[in-house]
Image 1: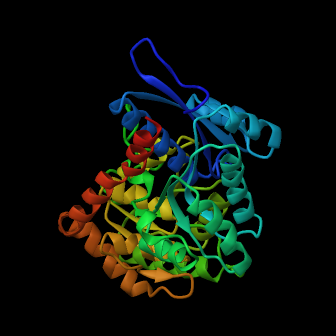
Image 2: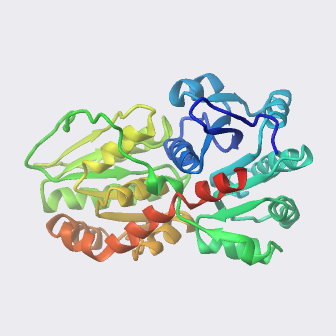
Amino acid sequence: MGTTSHTTETGLQVRRVVISGYYGFRNSGDEAVLKSILFALEEEGRQQGLRIEPVVLSIDPAWTTGMYGVEAVHRMRLGEVVRAIRSSDGLISGGGSLLQDATSAKTIPYYTGILKLAQLLGKPTFAYAQGIGPVNRRWMDRLIRGVMRRSAYVSVRDTESAALLGRIGVPRDRIDVVPDPVMALPLPAAQPPAGGPGAGAALPLIGVSLRHWRKDGADLALFAAALGALNRSRAVRLRFLPFHTPSDAEASRWVMERLGDLGGSTAEIAEPGEDPQQMLLEVSRCDALLGMRLHALIYAANQSVPMLGLSYDPKIDQFLNRIGLTPIGTTEALDPQAFVTAMGELLDNPEQWRSRHQAAISQLKQEARRPAKQIAAYLR
């Protein structure tokens, strides 16, 4: 079927697949998506007698190759992209929030353009756990509809994304609703010893993932007030987790400067480096997590860490809803006392939280590899 099909010495058929997404930008969430997809394709491919050789479209191909040990080409150099797709057996688009126009009017035309290019070159295309929307410019509907209807397999990460695709004309029975791929990301094989700067063994460790959102900073001021109230109610160790550097680290420092008197508490910023699995390890060590970044919440669910979510985008509410949760606050409102009470319950009764949500979490982890399984079956 493809141009690269051959068989390895171990009897595995080789399939070369181009992967398109927001890669090489050092965003921990998107890099975690890529790493999860690579893991899943390797494992599911092997189970079906394939060795899937990925080629990643990246803004920084050398960095991507160094980080994951895979071939990468520059996502903005059309000649390189065309050559990669032409010599492949198919193209995967995903995951993450690629098809939305909230961050830029260029995002949807770029990612649908890559899909359309692969289809024009006669390659099967696959949407891998995409988050669709918001789409505020109606003329973009036809771009999305055109490439999705021509794709061999379409999966989205929530029912709202499926509903949006349905409304713009993609047949609902062709859309597979699956969890975010990061739900299946494993911890690194060799775990470094626990503990870090300012480690206080007696203090409960709370991971905090914040980002800039409101231009006036009023949301971060709300969160600082709530964390300050928590510090006054009990001694804790706040460990800020920057998922997108340097902006998240700047937001974290801004909040830390406004916490007021820490009392018996401590506050610090983690430096897990650029490997997503190291950030997953950071989250796994937390007793609880306050998360604004979607992938901070997904990491916490992956490791069954009790969490409270802060909503700035419908994708936060959608993910929390899948494990039976609602946000503790938003960028517009967060009651400090309600936050202190809720966090206290998580710290005092973590097993109660786990028993209530473990079934939903286990199901998501189990289903997260389904796109890789379907894609491998098609390529075989």
